[in-house]
Structure formats: C-alpha cells, structure tokens
Length: 293
Ligand code: GUN
Image (cartoon, rainbow, N blue to C red; front, side, top):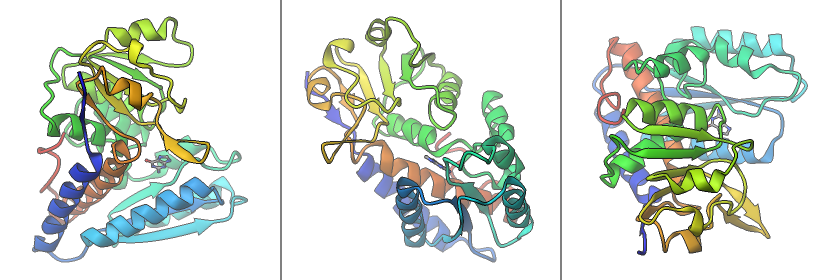
C-alpha cells in the first residue's frame, strides 16, 4: 500500500481563505487582534512568531508582538498579561514558549483571561477540554491534527490511537480531544515499554516526541494513519519523527514534514483568535466552534 499524502499546506490554506472571508464579512465594529508575548532570543520562537504575524495579516487579523529581554522577572511579565487582559482592543493573547528558566510558565499561562487564551494552554481551558465543554479553546496543534483527520474523511469512533509524546502543548490535549471524539487513546512517552508493540496496535499513530525518524515502517499496522508532528533538523534538512520514506509504503494516510501539521497550527491559532473576538463582541460564537471541534 502506498499512502495518500495529507497536505496540511493545502488544507490550512483553504481554512485561512475561509477565515479571511469571515473576517471580511464581519458586520460588527472593531477588528480582531492577537497579542504575542515573546521573551528572550530563542531563534525558533522568533521564526514561529514572524510566521504567525504574517499569517494574521493575510487574513485581516491584527497582531501585536511584544518582546522582552530574557532577564524580565515573573512579576513584570504578569503585569504585562494583566494589561493585555484589560485592553478591550486585544482579542487573544499568547505567550510564546519556552520561557526563560526563572519564569514559571504555569503562573504566566494561568494569568491569561480564559476568554482570551487562544492557545488554550491555561489550566482553565485544559480543564474545559477534559470536560468536553464547547467553550474550551483547544490548543492549535491538536486542533489542527483533528481538522486534518476530519478533512480526509477518517472515521474516529472506536479507533485505537497511539500518541507518542506527552507534552502539555500537543500530546496531552490531543489525547483528551481524541478521547472526546470516541477514540481509544494510548499516550506513550519516553518511558513507555515496548513502544513499537504499542504502535503496531494503532489505527492512528501520532508522533510528537522530537526524535528524528523514530517511527519505522515495521512498527506500523498495514493501513495505519500516520500523523507526524516532529520538526527536526538533521544534516541541514528538516525531517519528522517518522521515517517518511519507509512509512508511506505501509500507511493509508500520512502527513509530510514540512507541509503537514505545521501549517495547520498557525491556521487554528487564527481561527481561535477570531472565535475569541466574536465571543467578546457578540457574547456568542459565530465560527469554528461547531464546525471543527
Ligand atoms: N512553542 C511551541 N509551540 C507553541 C505554540 O503552539 N504556542 C506557543 N505559545 N508557544 C509554542
């Protein structure tokens, strides 16, 4: 079997076009604005933030990037969050991670007002997701993975899913989201025993562990759906956590790296930002919540 490639690039592009149309046709007052808090000089974070700003502009969403030296103290950062929470022109707030060591990210993420927490990283929104509550802002990468699976028509109910990687950003929220969609989820991690055996039972495999080409073809059940969240640079080239060349001969669907999950993450963040804006303006949801959750 040769897998169908799931083009996140194309699916994300269509979603951004739809979103741009919704933003343009919004008949109320004001415009959605995303505030991005960037601390320190992490090169990868700077690139991610630049991409978010460019993508926001293309769909008609404002993006204000606030940068701070890595020496900023936790209290000073909490005051920045307080000001953004109170600013009526700001629809959504994200704090780019990782934060410098002296700052407790849980303290900072907990301070973001839940209705502006468009990354869905606060304990409040993580809790709403675990309750399968429709008001939950769902983290962008898990939301993007779900959107990819639904876009190519994969039935989720009753499927065995193995997620490799238990991060707060991807693995844990994705486990909750897919459980809410009636999957049976195994959340595997670096201490999991017989990982390849576990993966072999999976109808859907999500690799999100940051280990280049870890998942091999002989780990996969014939016809498995393979979602690769990894972005690794090896000898100057990008590769995922799945050995793509091997795995595509065994899988039924597979995401490439680059051009798979990555573009979806930014598109979902922008959808969440517009959703936050609509809720704040109208005190109701007007997009996304019912069509992609
Ligand atoms: N760092 C890595 N991925 C993300 C993300 O999706 N959002 C934020 N805020 N930081 C990140």
